[in-house]
Amino acid sequence: MIIRFGTFNLFQFVEPPFSWYTRKDTFKPTEWEEKTTWLKNQIQKMDCDIIGFQEVFSKDALEKLVKELGFDYFYMAQNAKTAKQNPTVFVSTAVALASKHPIIETFKVPVHGRSILNHKIEGHFKFSRIPIKALIELPNKKQITVYVSHLKSNRLNEYEYLFNKTHTLKQKKEKVKEALEKNYSMALKQRLCEASSLFQDIKKTKTPSIFLCDLNDKEFSLTIDALTNKAYHQKIKKDSHILFDANYLFNKKIYNPHPEQKEKKRTATSYYQGYGNVIDYIFVSKEFNKKEKEFIAKIISYEIFDEHLQKNHDGSILQSDHAQVVCEVEFKKS
Image 1: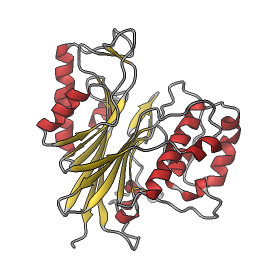
Image 2: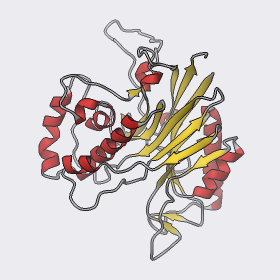
Image 3: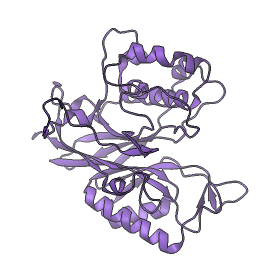
Image 4: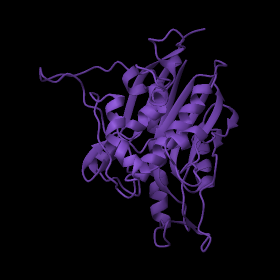
């Protein structure tokens, strides 16, 4: 049995006459028709069984759209909020989950108190967007837990350190220590606390888990360690992961025209000032890692749908400013 999972940032999914953030930011009916037509076509290209969505404002419109495409099950943990002064203007976004297989139970992901203390968060803390946690039953009667998340964005463009695969967890923590202690990067502090709370919940989850997200942070970031790595939270010498980046569990065919090129460069999912970054991910628990004894399925493809970004790196409000990520999983025969 093969199941396809996807993550899709919709980029201001706001049905007119509603607006996002300010009254002037609204779609004309013809623009909305163009946007939803593109979204439908893109979802059909992705050919997924389960999709996590970010930047959802208009719940009913998205539910109608995905059900027309065969996703019989739809869930949102919260509705996007509108301004008190003007109920036609949205001031927050939400995430959504669409599935072709039954969503049999949903759960609240609690904020982790110890993580708030460890990150020295002052005042009341809450998720910038409430994450989704849903138990889904697949055709082979196996149950999996699917998380959908959209972590805190860096809207103020605060400086945040860039890391690569040579940096150790210790080096990353040392680099950001002063910025966090002196509140130079509040967005990063919020993201780390959100990721830590999710880590604590995923760690206790009994079923195999898939995490679909706009992480709003780059590859090799400390946020990924907070989400996936036990060593971020405990005093242990070696990295120990509860989630794995599905991109690295797929054995890619590498076309290597240059002898010095060792690996294929990872495709960006978003661009800022012309520079591409990977900020949209699919993470999986050990049951989807064929190197683990407990594995029940393996990753057989990891695709990035970025044709629209190749034409325009900034994306279009009538399409999306993110690439879509799709991971294909093949389950072992019982």
